[in-house]
Image (tube, one colour):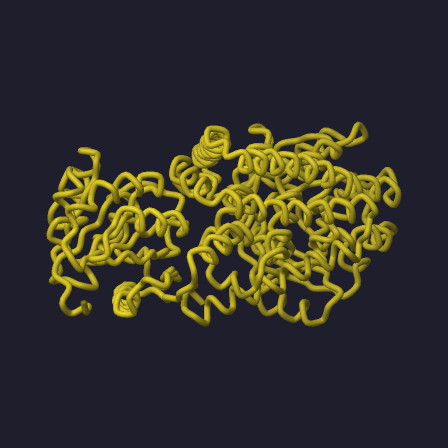
Length: 293
Length: 293
């Protein structure tokens, strides 16, 4: 299938990501029929009021039955059951993807539940915020952010090309890697920072925290993200995340030793290395227009 | 001395904090003569162009000689030498304070170099950013932020009242504690987050980092702060910071164990506890108008 033939898209789950996806679809593909599913009546009503999608279904089988593209945008912990429920109702040739933050398990589940006439290709648009729910949905949530596709040996080239073009139309910078590599990388650049932010809040004294500055608030912003969503993500990537924590802990112990031995030059080097490395990253992100200059 | 009698103030060091202080003084006390010192000609010229202060001196003795209030706003590593240089030139009755991020050492140095006719009282306005230099100075940098005063048994009540009123006039929420308590608290809410942000950048692969989202960038923002300033801060508070790292590392090891044992409920609890605690903090900060609602 080519993008120009796309007429009906289903968005499964209408929270921050699904709701934003609906709005983004409307802006990038105004003629497409957007079909949405949510298991909660409150969400369905809100999504209807906000114009997140064109049609809303309380049943996932109904929501997918006529679509050429189906996008799972619910918490990853719901994927397996949703895939199982939709499997028999997907039209032949349908492309299914997801926006989950881990990719090994979604790929495995898709292989388990979908037949050969369904093309599953995992996507991870690296966009979002600590906010939750369709109320915070924004048409530009995906714009300028990276998106990773995780094809397998079974994935057709046309499917890769289709989804690449699809996410690019939403303003994303698309690249591909294996699901295994994706999960290892994301453990380090996303799941670790999340747990770290949570750990820092957890060890803090609430009274002392009132004295904190913007630095602490920024460092811990993501700890305000929805716990069940993040539990699902982290539980789908426990081994990689554990390894990442181990690596970080080692670096912290190294810092602690430098402090205990009053090694001023070592401390300066750690701070200077981090500054240089982060400033390079920020400059690169600005050049790629993923950050405002 | 009372605030209404304040005619001449010296700001020692004209970087982000000193420059902002000069601008804030102009806005809160428009009739006061603002006298500035910087050891760098480049900074003196920029500060002159930006109107950071009214008079600029390349010699610290000249900069303080007629002032009723002297505020050290240079990196903490320069304090001891500056105090030593200014000591013989401060007018009797002069109040000296600083904006340093640790307080035990400044208090100790002041006791060492200043005679009884000089009242030193440490201040820590908890404001700033990862940016550096007088170019980033802002008149509202201190507005709505907390400020800690660290009096000793020798501090006169009139000095405490004077500085309290002074910082409040700049829009700060002032509270007092001992220098020892201050340094212990700040290790946990400021120096630890800084090292953590640096550690996370240091263990990351630069190529992988290009895929990071806003979460990673926020979590590590403070790692872009000036390394020499932060080395000074951390070297002035090594013991407390080491203890704080130890406490955090313990929490991380606990998380790692929960991951290794696939303890879903324990992970959810850690995430939910952190979310609830941080959301409470944000709500309190909003109520106190330290954050926009």
